[in-house]
Image 1 (spheres, one colour):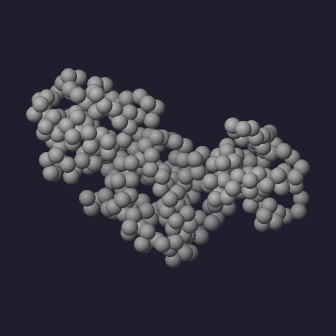
Image 2: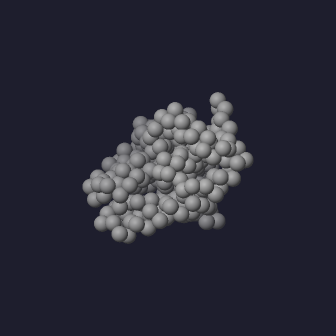
Image 3: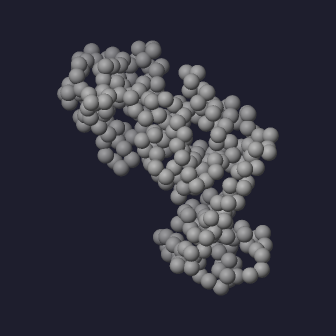
Length: 302
């Protein structure tokens, strides 16, 4: 077969993106083109190869047997290209390119916000794209270069780089709430209190982890309110709705100014650090190491 032209190589990249995303619409969004342009590219590629590569329905896109075989081979080749391009970073005065991150709300507030201005000023050739959401997802399938999650939730096939030390989780409440309902003295007392429950991505409620080691307990707390993100939890606690369970560093200002008080401090729990993670088979994207270094430096300072 004759050597591929530049446009044909681009069509192969389109094909690989569609296979990975299992969607013309999602692939078009990632590549910044229209779905009709992707359809045109795929028709050209299938015509040139003389083989049908994709089966497309109104709801999904899956590769044919021939398409899957081609994708498996191309994955190795494109990975080699990515690694070769990544290695050029050592010859650049500064990193350049697109860096797409998926992070939970707490990480965006505690880790990214303090460094964003300095990072963007220091590396103006990096196009940083941040998606903030608390649900767990497959960063590869969803087109992200890397993510930030608590260490215990990072998939085992990923490279995980700790950005913080172990994190301290505490129970807090507003003075108003404690004056009306009293202060719990033992984790079992929480069962008789109004608690702001944490709803996980699978819509189950998180059992509060209290204490450490052999003394650790998990309490399925009751309460009148459930939320799936920290800002709403903290706001409700400040308003006196109930007891809340959160990162101590997240409510440092509220503890300092007295709008929240720590409850059961001797039962504070140490949890995994927040980690930057990315696929182990990929070279780190441009700017990723620099961002991680900047976050760790800022975290040590606070």
